[in-house]
Image 1 (tube, rainbow, N blue to C red):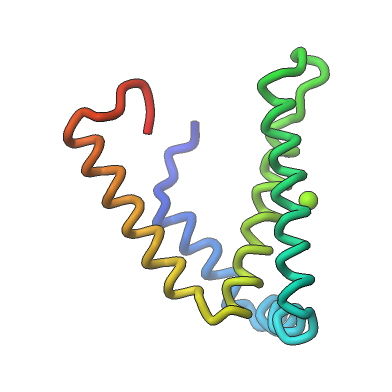
Image 2 (spheres, rainbow, N blue to C red; image 1 turned 180 degrees about the horizontal axis):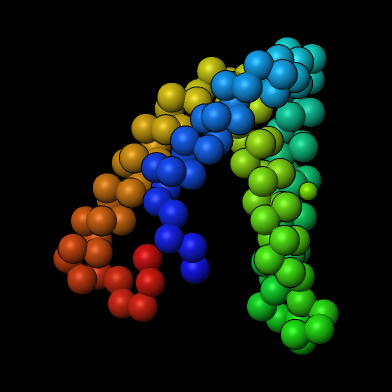
Length: 118
Ligand SMILES: [Mg+2]
């Protein structure tokens, strides 16, 4: 497992989003697509990620998706969340929710409520 913090990951995403060319194109997706379409694209990508994750755990070694397959779909889902989040004007709310969730998980962890994983 890579030893990269979530904060470092977030800075990578932030760097991508502050690249002018990427930002301009993301803005086009936000402004051009109807919200319903962006919702459906997110659901489509979620289904693709779901399929890869399930197959990762249920298929034999030679048939299971690769790490690259998982990364591809996680990236697709993340992008679609960001597009929809921006369209809804909810990116800061999503950040707040992530912080809240991490705090909540830490609280459960500190109380010993999770054994074997969070
Ligand atoms: Mg995909």
